[in-house]
Length: 281
Ligand code: 15L
Image (cartoon, rainbow, N blue to C red):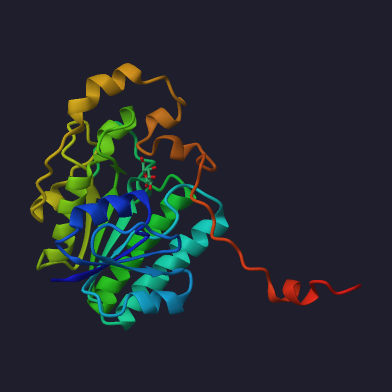
């Protein structure tokens, strides 16, 4: 049985994925936050913005699913540490530890500034809609470098919205159900011929903006289609921001920060602050 490292395993997507893959792979879960274990899995607490932690968690695994990092728009400092430095550390640590395959869940926000009336495939140039989107484009570029320069096998999934059901009109186009996620991830782990690939992580939605022929070529057969829920979702839908409604990224194209962002890791006090504590001036 293959051993798979899932970073950011305590998050929503990580939790769905661990549940779906339980019993199929030996799972090593890592996160900065504590994690509620599902079935048999090993948990390693790690801060991927530190190379030493990234090296520790990537030892002796067959593949890495790198979910760790900031998952919405946020302050630059958080994006920089978690998504730029963290992503570099995980890819580089995997390389140094001889791990050949990395699955990188990039995001629909790497291309969020394409308009709703455009159908895009895996070959379009990125049009990120946020600092978060830019960090995902960085990860895709780093994956391309590690494939071409070091011969690693890099599978980038531009993920839509992982949920059992669509939560609004926009998500009718990008719903990605947990079982379809598990199928695409399994292709990313098992396919014998991966060099550098970009696919869209979405179910077989009739309202999709994507030409996902690259995923289909690799054997992806989505089982779900958001259309089942369309009438109910559209009945509930309220008018939204007029600019956001023109672009695939939705609110990410207008928002400086999305409400309820993932919390920033707690900062340790600087050494100098500790030394001065209690000292009289
Ligand atoms: C993403 O990339 C986020 O990680 C997720 O939290 C959702 O906001 C999703 O995009 C979306 O566009 O719905």
